[in-house]
Every structure is written in structure tokens, then in C-alpha cells.
Image (cartoon, rainbow, N blue to C red):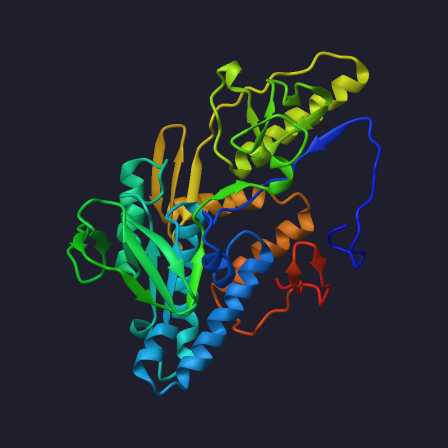
Length: 369
């Protein structure tokens, strides 16, 4: 049982079952990347990375070797989707805010680099908004490398391989004219910190289950039921519509998972009552992302928004997802105080997970607000 001190399994009989096991980070078989990189999937991941950045700044402050110091202050983020872009923007803001506590380190000494295997970041966003996001990242000192895949990371050096035949990658940095990139040959980057946000894959438990799967995800019908087991519903990242239904596949996002949950809950209720179930029919509501410095991008119902207005929209959407009024107020208050006070740079406590099968419970995450 995960999350407890008991390292054992147990058998539970059920009348109805909802499978919502989600997904896991996809490292594409690169063990050294998995072992040496940071992820951005949970609150623990975020706190670990935050503490890591503080430790790096502390170490670099007293480092006399210029080569090692440069490697310590270079943060590499792999994956130009929502998670990668938002992480790059927030990390850059965090470093900018706390650099004043380290007199020997200037903002220009720290370099955040975002790497994407395709020729564009934020695939799925309108091109105009994706370009706006890239330009803002570059404007704030973040290097953006496109058309490059990571092949290895040993904790000291990131190895790259171009996705094109030219063996060159597209680099956008602050030294170039706005909106322009140049072809360069980059085979490696010296860095002590790599953040991996390059996609997800189904978990092994789903792949090894008795359910019929497609691409590692459980096949479901239009009611989100597993066809062989009508009393079982599968929702979220771990499920996929049976190709025979000719239904459009949806991306593994929280927006889709939330819609799945509502339909599955209703259908489970109707199944118990013997009523009529509802088919899953979803219209895309739009998407938004923040890119740091109170700037965002959003696309809703064909309307594209960028800048501070999109940032405010993102925050309002975030607040709307918080159910309890007291938590909603505390988050709003925290955001308001952030406008007037300096950022806290104290290290935060975490729940340390040694392995998926061996939880070691330490101090709980501080309730910081």
C-alpha cells in the first residue's frame, strides 16, 4: 500500500470500479536521464527543484572555478510544452528575485535554457501566441533551443542531437533580433541541473493489467466503460477511446480528466439506479499558460489573448478550481502579498519518496501561504 509504512498488497472486492491511475513521466528509455534529472509533476517535484536552485546559488556564490561555477548556474529544461514553458518562466522569475541575496551572482550569470525537439514550442497553441511566448522568454534572458533532442545526461553534461539532417539546431537568445533564430551546432551543454518535462507515458500497471489496451492505455467505450467489464470505468490519462468508435482522441490534460470524471460519476450513478447513461461528448474550452513576469497567453473560443490580461485570466481560472472558500481566500491573499513583499527563499520540507514501492514518510509539506 503506497503512502504507508506497510510494504504489502491487499485484495479488495468491488461492485463498481473507477480506474484513474494517470500517467508517468516518459524518459524514452534513457536511464541516466531518469536517474539524474528533476521532474515537474507533483508539489514534491516543485519543492525539490526550488530547494535545488537555492543550493546551487549558495554553492556558486563561493565557487572559485569559473567553469564549474558556470555549470552550476546553467539550468536546462527539456520539453517545450505547457510544463516546460511555465517552468522556464517561473524559474527565471525566482532566480531574478533571489539573486539580490547573492552579491557575487548577477542575473546574467544564471542562464535558463529551454530545449524542444520540434521546431516550435507550445504545440497546439495558435502560432501567433506560441511566437509571442517564445519572444517573451528570449527577451527575459532564456535561451530557447529548437529542433534538438536530448540523448543523455550524466549529472554533469547534457548531450544533444539535432532532429534535422543539417545536424544543427535553432537557437534563439537575447543577442539576436526579436523573433529571429539562428542555426548553430550544439552537441552538449555543461550543467548540473536538468528538468525533464518532455511528455508522459502510461504506467506499467495499466500495461500489465487484464484490460484491453491501445498504446498502453485502457480501451473504453463512449460511456467511459471498459467493454469487457461494464462495471469498470477508466478515466483520465490511463484511458483511450476504442479506435473502432472513430471518436477523436483527446490530449492527456487536466481539462479532459475533469470532464471524464463528471461523466463517469454520472454514469456510475445511473448504472446503479438502472437509468440511462450519458455519452462522453466534449467541446474544447480553450487553453492558457503563464510565461513569467505576470505575463500569459490564452486562447478561448477562437479568441487569442496575450500579456497581463491573459495572466489575470489564468489566475481567475485557477481560483475557480479551488473548491473551499477559505483555501481560495488564502491563495488570493498570498498572491496579493506577493505584490508588496520580497520572495521567501527559505528551504521547504518535503515528503521524501525513496522508490515507488518504499515510501519513507518524513515531515509533511509546510502549509505555506
